[in-house]
Image 1 (cartoon, rainbow over the protein chains, first blue to last red):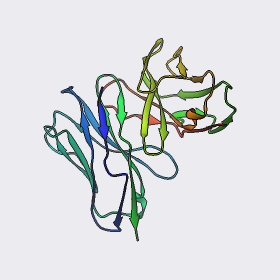
Image 2: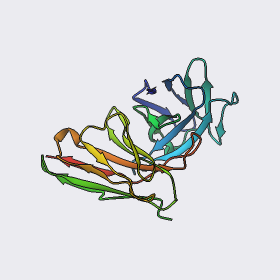
Image 3: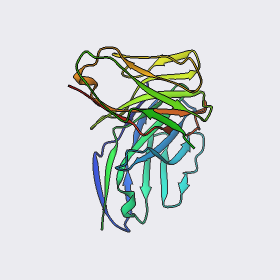
Length: 112
Length: 113
């Protein structure tokens, strides 16, 4: 079974600075996708970014980018120019042929 | 645009009671799933379905039953609630395929006393 590990339960960053959230996973699959979801205090789950395992190019969505290291099974999220609205729980997720598994989450606080 | 609708939003149960958490989606998604969210443990998969009439177990299926009689609905049943089932429950749906985004309901906060 796939496992997803987020080793940083909590992080904080000053507004306008850059922060990186870590995620590692374990799988024997070759074809899979990785996702980052954001959960603000409203509890809504919002897709931030996705990455296909076969693509070497790292995905980017505006201020959000990933560093995907397939051999190391690492998938970190970089948030540039952090904004107060980025304060939320962030979950890393792995989607294989059968289901989607999530990590324990990182609670990010952006300080003014 | 309703998306994924979960009911109820909040529920308090006594130990041993049964209940059904409802989940409905209007996007014609084949894939639906249930997760529970607990502090420090993230979202853990309870059950999932790849289409009507097909269900399978996830990471933490014990104490929960599901069925999928239609594409739209995927109810989660607690047959005899226990305090360990106190959690926030999320239903999600997506098209079949590894690259597809999962859409989530607003969650149900369940407390078992």
